[in-house]
View (cartoon, helix red, strand yellow):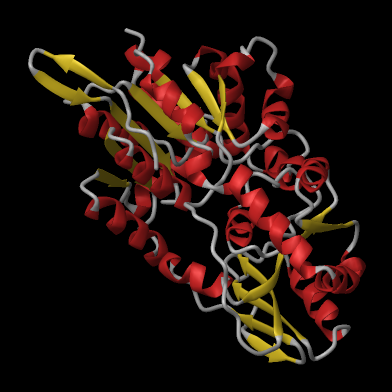
Length: 400
């Protein structure tokens, strides 16, 4: 059970602490999860979501669920005219504006939907939301908490190729020492984010790994083949080709299955020997049912930049795999080595060529890896076991 949040007394009326969750771009799972967690912990939660495009159907389901729980969710969609968008693009190219998406109108709209509210904490999910919060709440900046979802730094291609994102990262580095706190998944990603920041007080960091609600689940699989599952965004065609190559080297005992595949628009669904790629979107309500069919999980992320290499505690895939006791395969990076040292729940590989052998090695000691996956879930990936530090921070009296 999640402990109840703190309350303040005003006369004879007991008021729950009020939390604003601010997000720009996509209505991600993490926003939904945080809103539900804080609501269940007794907080008065207000979600403000901004975007330049309509919400995707998968994310609309998350928003609908948030609202069904009595959480106020204001969605600000910037429906600029084509002429306005063109002018903004020209101004951005000329360097006269630093960001195209975070317009003055969007900042004013955030202020408009929050003007009658007094927040104890403002949680901004990512650098874009942090920029919005910094501009929209100048008198309450010491109540802002950044929830870091991705760490974009000099090794990341987008840092050099996306001028707008680089501006937001530089703004994040500038204001982080002045915020109330930083929420981030683990000490590995904290070190990565703070590498270019000298004056930040690390005592104000709250670790909040990507988790899912418990308890652990024992799947009841029937028959064969043994499914080796990759779900989610296909971040490169090379990954798809390598998984298909690995499938051809496996016996008919296995089936490599790719489900979802957001981010690879040119790839078509297909079926081959020991291999299925199904791009049909997976509603969040059906994810657990899909994962329960898997024997082994694939949790391979791009290995070029440090953000993608540091994903052992920031991956929804891994959290869901471990909930069902599913051992997984990942690239051999420091945070994964730490996880494997604490709970030997995975096989780590250097190259794609090692995939078939890793699959066979897990199968040979499956009960061992399965039990360790559940232990990893209990310690690292169960939401109820990893939210106390955050709730303690939010229960503290706010700064004026």
